[in-house]
Length: 154
Image 1: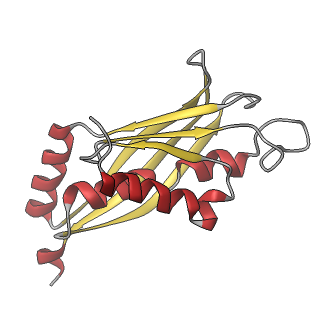
Image 2 (image 1 turned 60 degrees about the vertical axis):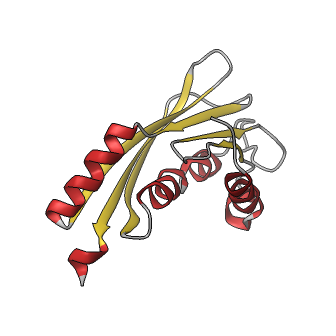
C-alpha cells in the first residue's frame, strides 16, 4: 500500500523528533492504513560504540515507539495505547545497516478492538527484529502494550 500525504507527514515528524533522530534510525515507510512501518538503522559515527558496532541504545530506540504509534492510529481515538514493558535481546553486533519491518494483521487489530471493548483493557505483546541485508537477526525486541477502551475508563 502506498504512503498517503498524512502518513508521509507523520514519517517526517517522527524522523525529525529529537529523541528518535538521535538514535540514527529513520522511518522509511508508513502505510496509509498504518498496518505496516519500515525502519532503517545504518551504522554511523553517531551510533557507533567503542567496539565499532551499533550502540545498544540506538538498537532499542529505533524500535521503541513504533507499535504504539501504529495502534494509536489504527484503533482510533476511542482507545488509549501505552507502552507498558519491553525486552530486547542482542543477538549479534550490528556492523552494517539494519532494518525492521513492523506489521499488524487486520484480524489481530479486530481481535484487539473486540477484546478491549469486552474487557475494558488488555495487554498485548508484539515482536520485531532488526535484520541485516541477508536477513540475519541482530536484535529482537518484544514490546508489551496496554490498550484501554476509553468508554470503560469513564
